[in-house]
Image 1 (tube, rainbow, N blue to C red):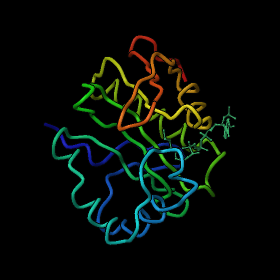
Image 2: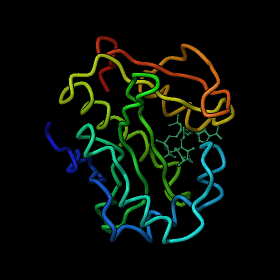
Image 3: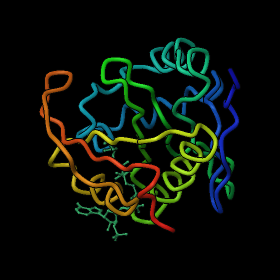
Image 4: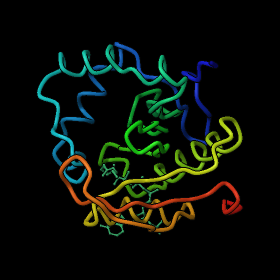
Length: 175
Ligand SMILES: CC(C)(COP(=O)(O)OP(=O)(O)OC[C@H]1O[C@@H](n2cnc3c(N)ncnc32)[C@H](O)[C@@H]1OP(=O)(O)O)[C@@H](O)C(=O)NCCC(=O)NCCS
């Protein structure tokens, strides 16, 4: 299994696995009420929790890929995460992303996702990528739509009704 802790580069971002040194940035992101509100996840309560979450993150060891930290090249700071996650229960690969609010509205999530999607199709040779989103998360839905993903179903997942967006490798847009 190839280890993809080093992810793609985009014009403004470097994508790479988080390390323990990223715990303060990871905590700032995952404890921010505006960031967490529509993710369906509880906010982290302490930097210790952030350290533990990074240390125990199993995906890279298990399948070789996972959610990467997004480092803004201009400042070298971690401003979000983006990446693919294998969902064992659904047998699907899910694209996920999250950025600090001061960086919203600049196309950064889309930029990170375009590179992540290309990685999924070109490097991992995936046939399909899905995105799970709460129906009220209109900004996230917009990102999925800009990637060319289409709504295909809705179902109960982790106790919430989620909407599933999908794209097949044959249907990727030329972005
Ligand atoms: C979702 C999120 C990652 C988007 O990040 P971003 O860098 O601002 O995204 P982009 O700039 O690439 O694109 C956002 C798009 O949504 C649009 N948008 C922003 N807020 C919106 C809203 N409230 N309603 C509808 N569209 C909205 C923007 O106009 C833009 O579309 P456009 O390019 O057509 O104008 C960011 O809002 C975030 O981190 N949210 C909290 C975490 C989260 O919910 N993650 C997703 C879980 S499924």
